[in-house]
Length: 365
Length: 272
Ligand SMILES: Nc1ncnc2c1ncn2[C@@H]1O[C@H](COP(=O)(O)OP(=O)(O)O)[C@@H](O)[C@H]1O
Ligand SMILES: [Mg+2]
Image 1 (cartoon, chains in turn brown, orange):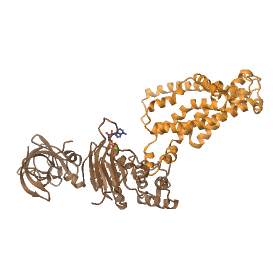
Image 2 (image 1 turned 60 degrees about the horizontal axis):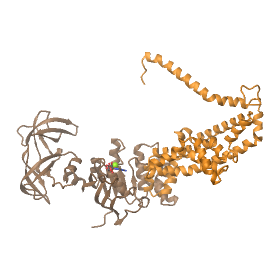
Image 3 (image 1 turned 180 degrees about the vertical axis):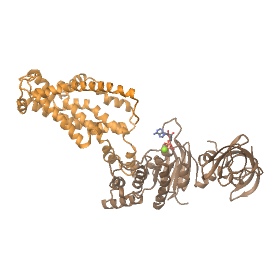
Image 4 (image 1 turned 180 degrees about the horizontal axis):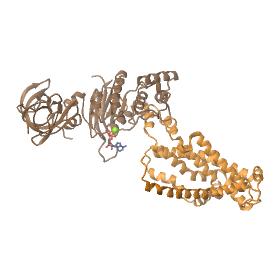
């Protein structure tokens, strides 16, 4: 295997002795050219991790390795990173071009080359016409793109983005996602992207590291993290989830490369099908069914488990239902072309056994 | 904006008028001494007295010949300038250390730096005489400067700390990530951002030092009398109206400073 661009080895940060560490023996490897999202709820240690990689903060323990070389003790200004802060952190007393040129100035590049590279960087974010403007008068989106140009113009070893979209309004946020992703792919900059927004992570990242309480709960491709969460936390944090208690009754043979189909018993639903890792027969597991995989049948003669509709929310693209089955409410999301049930209606729920997933046993933490 | 109901609108002018009268009285109270001095400076009276019996410019004409004033002015300008320079060289790095680094006992250090504001100047002056005397520093420029640095440092630290704590530290961090070492961050980012606070502190330090009489009187009355000391002495033994003319010159001097600062960077932005 080739050396990863970035490796974090048992990275730990304890702000105060006695308190729980903000980042706790974190291990991760990032491949060259990838955009990795550090995704997790507020306070889970994302910013702390990013700041340690940047060199703005010393780890309490552990190592940061870039291109096979341990950089843990190299000071921040010699790490050659590019970082975009949540507040953009443009230099208020410099115009746009001087902001972008700053890193090149620190690298003592000749003026002609500086000008040329600043011009190219501003063109890349389509703001060449703002070069001589003061930064204060610019909109959030413009400041954001200038901060990105300023970080990328030095051709950084790693691009570090700390919630770069969280200060923008919803519309702009969506379009900036695509723009940042396109620029990242064009420049090939290996990128760590901190976010608490799962949609952003799913949309933009090559890999997602789901963090919780200073640890990575799961590291994988977006579809893997979404379809095959390793823990309840991941299943609930990424997307919406129905989590059911299932007792595995019988093994029904292979499903795909390394999973098996099982018959399981679920309170309220009776005997249903699910997939999961091998060797689960006889065990009890949490079963995940995504709401949009649940089929809602209004026809009383249909197959499936009966339940009572508690609430209906119509979004145009789909209809969301809360349906009470037995003593628990389940979520379902149905297309709008069929009949739409009303609260109080009795409907029947079922799903393709291949879209019900038995979570692996949770490790003790 | 919505219009308030009529019955309220009636009452507002009464209190507004009362407020205006009060403010006007305050201004009169504050400005009357200045007005009186200006008037006296143009009088033909021999002594400092009011009202004038006639008008003349003789006190202004005599000012340049008044060597005690000229020497006092010289001493004051030298000590105030050096004080300002030193106090900035100490105060700005000290503020940065307090605001940006995890200094143990930060609270105690801040309190120590700000404490001269709370100690009566007479007490401070007495302490200085007792300390500087054995060192041979009484009646020297150094003695005055040491005294003035200790009373002006709090102002510089306060204004600089204020700018530092309101400034967004992430632009300093952004500069470090982009390759700036500690000195480059200070010179290219921190200092330009806190410049208004530093200049405000410097101006206040200069003015306080320029105006200071108690410490100068204790520390250097006979050797290096500053202008305020000379004025005190002058009023004590001759009491003619030359002092009034000098005061008007000093008023103009402060107005010029204020206008210059306002021109260069906007005083309101500097002081707030
Ligand atoms: N400078 C600090 N001093 C003490 N505790 C801190 C500091 N910065 C962050 N923390 C704590 O560390 C934890 C992780 O913070 P952070 O990395 O900022 O989380 P995130 O970016 O995921 O929201 C939080 O509990 C936070 O309160
Ligand atoms: Mg954060």
